[in-house]
Length: 77
Image 1 (tube, helix red, strand yellow):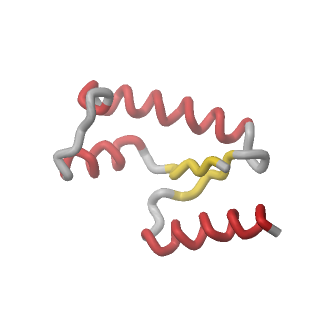
Image 2 (cartoon, rainbow, N blue to C red):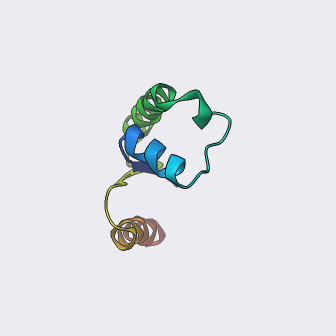
Image 3 (tube, one colour):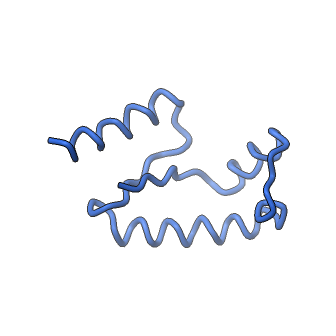
């Protein structure tokens, strides 16, 4: 199972920047992050329900956790 936390690239980039935690790729800038995000979403949508699960990354941590666990439980049933 693969979970993709769908979050606008700009939001994710800003979060990492505020945490002072930009890695080598992130230092390339938000434009690259937007393209990477689009590519992952394309793969995830193509393989949705098989292996990939898209979760709204703008939800609270608790809501994200609940959404992930719901999918894990379904898979284990």
